[in-house]
Length: 345
Ligand SMILES: Nc1ncnc2c1ncn2[C@@H]1O[C@H](COP(=O)(O)OP(=O)(O)OP(=O)(O)O)[C@@H](O)[C@H]1O
Ligand SMILES: [Mg+2]
Image (cartoon, rainbow, N blue to C red; front, side, top):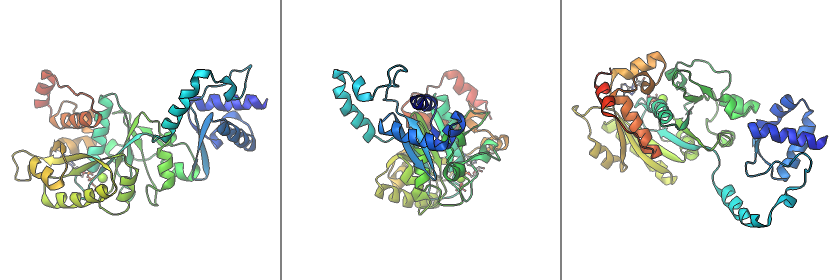
């Protein structure tokens, strides 16, 4: 009977991660019994547990074999002689970072287009068959959802931290673009320890793009801390470049991988800094330029990324090229697509 409960817990967790509360509700068993079994399974290394706020989230250990129904023996006895080398591999795997690939979309300057860039790189990643989630880390002026026509959410990171729900239950899918959104609605420091742990519960095959507030002190430092890689957004003007440079210095001190800069609101014939000048001033490569166009306002009005709204427009192609650069996946433009782009406004 008690082995049965272990099996039921494992079978549930094999399908999706869950908290103790979720397991209790789903399996209709007293919380105490669930907690006891979680300890046993964790000791057997069949599951991993993470404390998130007041709750414990449990994940099935993919490297573990589910014991068969008739012979639920300790794992050691199931090991074959040639499995000794896998111990080394296990060590390797556990020392690697878990969770999704996190990319902070940052800038020292406000209003340069961080949110527009986050949402559209996210939509462009989907076109490349990548799994992308955009996260709003701007708690004071949280408006990422509005760019996608999302005004309210049943759950956000606040519920993940305060009520212990699983982070995947706080992710909402935008119907139009298919983009996944993780809203914040936190009044406290946006990326505290619990949030960091919760983020790591997102499966490894996802890319999490973090839309950040402007500035170069806290809370932006928190975004940088939690990011594996950084994309700097700037306008091609001296004040934006100066603020962005200050922030990039902070990021360098924190030893973060800088993918490069996106120069937004760029126009090749206007009087502003050139790509070469931006690269020299920021001391990083420009991974893409994004033109200034009314399509951005129109797409925000429609509540959809411009990449989804006008997929062939020049601005959308720019975002797809940036996404391709970030992932290393090829984005090929057919001649017809380029022609369609000319007439897409
Ligand atoms: N490429 C563009 N072309 C035209 N307008 C743009 C472009 N990018 C951004 N905008 C406009 O600039 C406004 C500010 O953009 P956005 O909200 O993305 O900036 P932000 O850096 O996230 O601002 P904040 O620092 O306040 O979070 C948008 O509402 C949009 O109207
Ligand atoms: Mg913003």
